[in-house]
Length: 259
Image 1: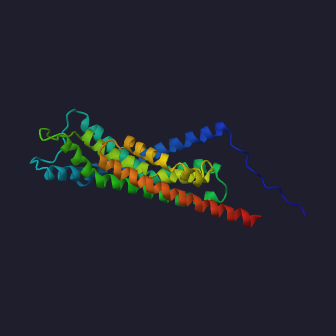
Image 2: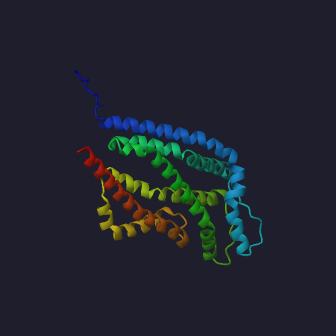
Image 3: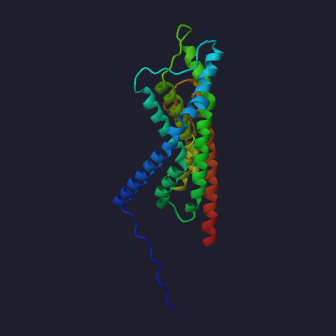
């Protein structure tokens, strides 16, 4: 009986990876651009219902009797702010597609069984990003209150749209990216770059690194935001070690069953 040989794909060259990366980046930018159109129409609702309430509550808590509005100091401030918020909204809405593109780019480094984690990777990545953005928004009021109080009673807070909205949106994105930390660690363990044992051995150094990274990516620099980001990142660090151990055991069982 004749058996046909199964064709195997030739390994990708360096330039093949570069070409695929370029294609993934182009499609991701197009996805962000298309999703940003929705941000242009949602701008007024986001400003009145999402972004301004923390600022208004801080003014009330500090007894500042003034209208809760943002002040434009340059003719292009309003235009630039609307475009910036639209891009941030586009980034959030296109996050599932961006994560899927990232997964499709890194799958050549994984075996057949590990490629099955595509949907859990995308779902968990989106969920963690949204959780990080929510934590940033929830702690932003306390952070803003600390920053305004630190300036003293003689300083009257009067923010421009670019400065204020840039701060709150950047914090939400920074926290969202920071909450992707366990996804990165799990992937590094799946690819064999690091092992759960190595992560456990360098736990103390990792704690210091987490605090430093959290201090760098939080633009406000206040202790509330620093603690709100660094503590979950450390919890995620420990959980990623447990996930890595589970993946190792599953891989050993699969190898034993095949042998």
